[in-house]
Length: 183
Image (tube, rainbow, N blue to C red; front, side, top):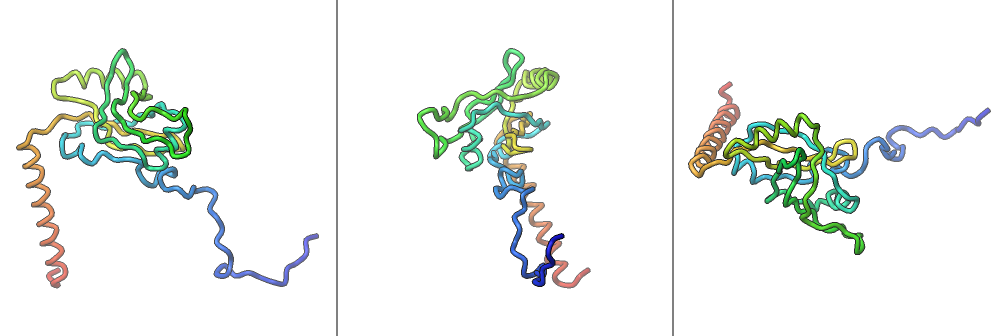
């Protein structure tokens, strides 16, 4: 029979237990994106979004965990019934050796056959392309959010900026009215 302890620890005095269910790294746990393409929403209209896995090497995954991925000039391509991600820059792994990965190699996207067929038909429309908008982790695997996008003209960009500014002013006016007591 176990011995009774005369010393009781209150929850306030208890040492902070490590939560083994949640990793310490917010990127690896999926709480934060590993990389985002912020310029994409400025340059394109997003028509539809898809989630795809990415075929990566071990040092590439470790570099993405370190935050060394850049989606700025990358784009998707459907060719011969397969989808690929081009110009995705993943910096070299800090603890890698001579077998480290090539930084901008073409990487295969992991999609179902029906999704690839659908993407192929939609990207053949003039002005439509595949743009990766973010990289993130889901259940320990790197996922890429792809957007079927249509390029914006300069006047589209100005119109979007005008709308955003008008919304910002309206929100500011509503908040100012709330603080004045005009409920």
